[in-house]
Length: 202
Image (cartoon, rainbow, N blue to C red; front, side):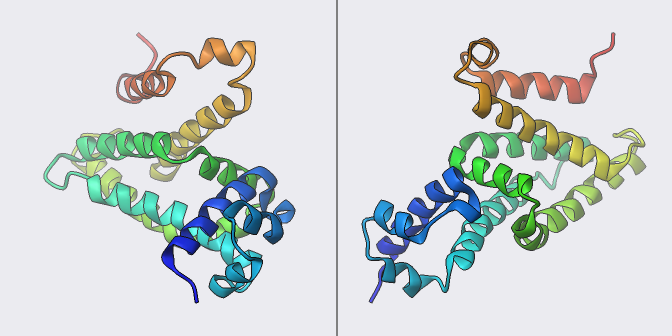
């Protein structure tokens, strides 16, 4: 009855719909119209709006985790592994469709029901475990300071998320055009890595 191309169109349309309206405001009718298919086709693939939304979130979180896991250089020292992870995280966030970021921000802002259900098992728990191992090895071997592993991880992730949230929110204002001009993503990454490795105090 269906085909992969139909599901791809559904997912692309749903991604835009959820980014624009959030889970509660999204409508299957509009998703079907965006995808150029009959609404019944959506229910062929997905039981309801909730299962479609969870699929969108799972794509976002599992792709991010598997990308990060695949690029960690296992033959390097822990500090180099950590920097490679941070760098790859920033590159990945910069490369994904911004609708995914909007969905994530909407989800967290609305209480995170599905964030907890989907992100915890597919991204946060495995990522915490992966980074914690690198960080603890780095502290034991003297490459990293004796900081709280989880707070440090959240500081990095939070900074990148907030940068993108502000950029996407005020990017079209006079202040946004001043802050986020040129290769702002690349400039932010360079600045962030410098702060992370060297600090800001002389």
